Length: 62
Image (cartoon, rainbow, N blue to C red; front, side):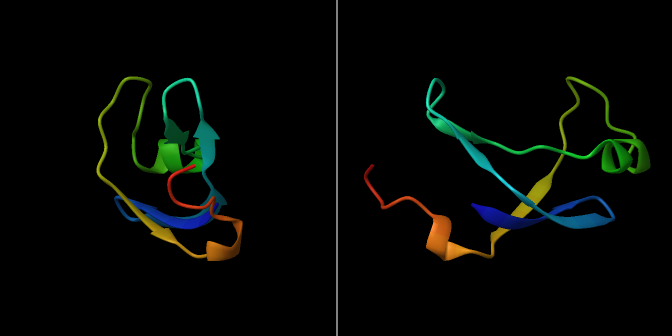
């Protein structure tokens, strides 16, 4: 699913991917964003995610 993501002062467009093993989605965060926002592995960050492409969203309940 295509999304617009904001972490700190960084906003970008990307996609989130289903992780069936965990029953959740994976959000890749670009290296440039991790550097700009001083994020390291294991850090906790506040993330705003806005769905921008509903056509690729799986049907509810699947």
